[in-house]
Image (cartoon, rainbow, N blue to C red):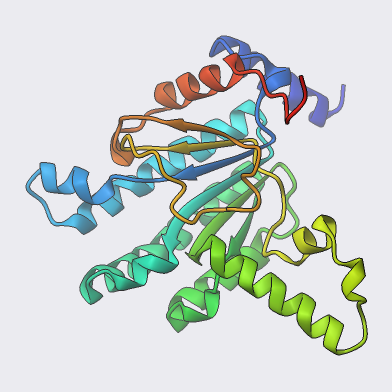
Length: 252
């Protein structure tokens, strides 16, 4: 038996142990990690302590996805609207991003996770851009799972950038406007991979400008736990809820 076959068998066993059907897990999971600041405030701490604790949850949930064999995970790490937060909080978040990338790189190697990033990354500080480029290059050959960080990301901005790219191609004579369809627009996005399930923590019920195109037919689950409190057991419960739903995509 090949190592890959053993890996698939182990993932299936992991799913069944959690009460899940291995054949009905999402192929692409997206998570809006909400509640870091509120969690810290409830402890009487500054907000950045919540973001630091939330990084531990990122590791736990990413590892859980690998163990289940979920091939794609996209995390809403920093939105385009988050630039409006106090300058000190933004600076701390950028420092935590660099720290996270350095600390978690061995885990990415060990679990063979390929790191990607989407968003207007040019807005990130130079140190964060450099750390991100290095981690992406170091993990480019891995295929076990793709972990995508949405950074300086907005769904509307992504659509605008895709339209600009298509407009440039039309202006250059490379593309006929009549050839633009859903497939071409999807290919012009930062990442047009369709999402099966969106989980948002802290009980919020909004997409908040996250993957607007990709989530057109995604299931949405809101969980009451704040992100630093969100456990692997909570995650498995969300997946069981997802598997109870009937996805018809407009069909009867």
